[in-house]
Image (cartoon, rainbow, N blue to C red):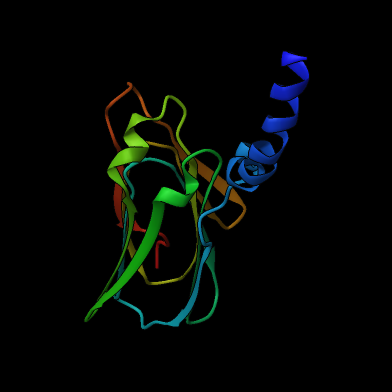
Length: 156
């Protein structure tokens, strides 16, 4: 009798809690997508608390940026792009509670960079550059040490 009462009383609680629990692997922060007209000589600076960055060299004058956070804690990650004259700054903003998670979100940024644009990247993840079919990759050497890269993407 007691078991039946607990079973009946828990069903409404579970029904109300189900949308809050969701599927942890499917959580997404708002994905960040921007396309900008840029001039040769401008700089893109990417600064992430964690995550991977992929830079793809393209022809043209449009800079395209895609950034996302997926997994547990993704809703605590946001992205901000600031125009500072000839410098574009993309930064991830992670809420403090995300640091308390054992397994945090997977953060990734892909940027399609026109020739002649300088790029500076700082992250604790991996940096990959695709240029003229070649792929250069810069992994983290030790835990806690950020990967960093400051260089023009192209050799114009």
